[in-house]
Amino acid sequence: MTEDALHMTRALDLAALGLNTTDPNPRVGCVLVRHGRIVGEGWHERAGEPHAEVHALHAAGAQARGATAYVTLEPCSHTGRTPPCADALIAAGIARVVCAARDPNPRVAGAGLARLEAAGVAVQSGLLESGARALNPGFFSRFERGRPHVRLKLAMSLDARTGSAEGGRTWITGEASRADVQAWRARSSAVLTGAGTVLIDNPRLDVRIVYGPWVRQPLRVVLDSELRCPPHSAVFGGDHAIVFAAADAAQASVEGADAASRRIERVPRSERGLDLPAVMQRLAALEVNEVLVECGARLAAGFRRCRRSRLRTNPQAETRFPNNFLEGRTQRLSGKVRALCEAAAPKRLARGRHMSAAKDPVAGFPR
Image: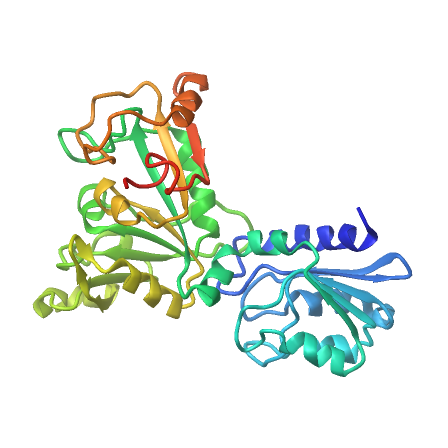
């Protein structure tokens, strides 16, 4: 590994420290090196607070002059919640800047590197870019594709059932899975579910783990085309909740003293509910980077274009639940998932992680 790659790897490790807290900003790390020695480090911790470059410059002090800055994302060139980082690097006398990825935000998009070059700073980009993008899949998706990065979490029995015959709340997975879900909620910008899940399970969809002095709660999003969910539902208990309803849903359903507990957004209908692309576009406009979908089989099937899925399967539970995620198209799980289930110890979980819906209809969605 080259010296540049070594220092950029360290910058990526620093960026990961902001995994749960920087939203809606990207996770960014910075390392300052002078004469082969690290003189300053920093990472972006929280939106509205100093960026990674500023923390590193403060740590380096006068030793920043003539140093090389390794940054996981192009230094910003605009004034947002904080001043431009490119200007701070120039003022500190940084001689060279190496960034992993260019900023997809059109307010930057190469302007930060151009400003540095114009000031006589040597610049390089693209070093370990895949690592920077992997840390910020939603940030890049929001600007490059106009929608958040979507993950689907679904619990099912081995024969792809997701709910009990009696209705009501059903536990299919165990404590290990629920702890894992908490970690995914913590890094997500929003947690999304459907009206059916709210009416049956009444979930809070909040983060209950403590990972620092301040815990960021994700936006709670409910798809409720007819506005059936009561405003006093647990998911509306905080101050970060949005309900997406059909454009022609009855206006009277949102009136009353409890209406302030939720914000109503209107989107067009689709054949099987709401227009999901319209929902995703609206969430992107609200600076939502990553969405964790926790829902039942019907809504999950609607997210057939989701590229990432979190499959939770109980190898001991089979043919007991009526709600088939595959909607009758097949009763067999793929060999890959079945092998994982059979290899798991009793009551443990089989994980189908990062599976492509185009290749595996079980791990993703029915074709």
